[in-house]
Length: 128
Image (tube, rainbow, N blue to C red; front, top):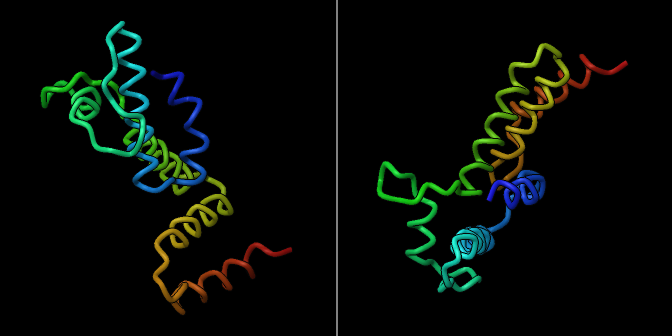
């Protein structure tokens, strides 16, 4: 299952798909888990919700089979990358990470004036 996640990780981290694709990935992973155990899979490999998928991907603490959910791991990896960028000793990397976070939190009307002013200040600081 880790090989499946490692193959899909760069794609998931660079461009998060919509919820239907996420569910399809989860269903595919659950089917792979059942097949690796030699069990017949009854999970449709489309975007439908399935109780077997939820059971296989849930932690043991809440009664699941504790197979790592690729969506949760992607969120953890993105969080780790952002925290690493915010704590980096290089100012340019810290700034670019902050811009990435602000860009992802943009409202429907674009950046606020305050954000635009910070970008202009940063460009003047880091320009040659």
